[in-house]
Image (cartoon, rainbow, N blue to C red; front, side, top):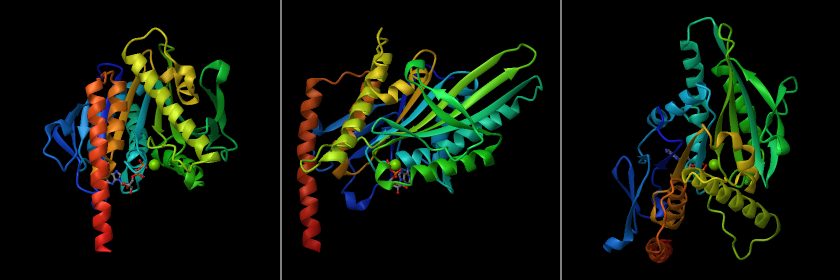
Length: 350
Ligand code: ADP
Ligand code: MG
């Protein structure tokens, strides 16, 4: 059972030595403590609480234990969206896709759906599963399954602005892996886009019961979001500015929607981005949302880590006080100083 409709988990990836000392600690399994790592000043430490926090040594299997209830909920007929949020290199794709020996959520979620549906041994009902896959780049949808020419199609999004996508029926985990492989290959064709586009795999679940005539349709969205670290460098121009503006706009619109849902606002701003618009029926109402915020643990990433944690805290509707903002500025300064120090040291060594 999932209590509440929006949950936020935080996952730190393993440290990379070249990125400086660690800037995070894990006092317990719901808290991440961020510190400058170089100063004893207690105001340079801050605790963030989430529904669950995973340190660098937590593997894919352990994470999945806490994702499983969302899969069950999708099978029970609710729409579910699971997002991986975070700066480039923080582990979003590792969490969603993983590798052949360390599988991520795409495969684990499908296998769980498949196993759960097979454990229903009564022969009066059946489940059918379909997959759609698309990439959202500069607000443009690119269908990643166009090569399945015999497949049927399905519309996603509200009727006035929906998109028609190829949907491929999958009968078992081998089928699913085959379709996923095609989607990932098409997504990976343009490497430069991987951190500036959102990748959305959707598992469509159809349930029918012949005795009661009950029919349920639900969707499980698995979203590997674009990197949250897009910033407009002084030298940036043309295409890269357009890309970054789209990423920033869509991530902030997603934050606004989650925060409005948590605050139970009357008006939810779905229309403010193509991303939230297409996922409208899986954000709000009886749908369940899981945001997994991925962070890099090292000091050189501390300001991006703070901005990711603040984004997610906002989704849980934890107001940021002015005091916090001052602290963040102080942290940024300390992080910049220590980054400089690290750089100087590296120069000395070489
Ligand atoms: P992102 O998609 O956020 O840009 P990646 O998932 O590509 O980041 O992760 C960056 C690197 O860190 C990859 O080499 C990935 O394998 C590794 N990595 C990320 N998270 C973990 C983790 N939890 N355990 C082991 N390696 C990880
Ligand atoms: Mg990635």
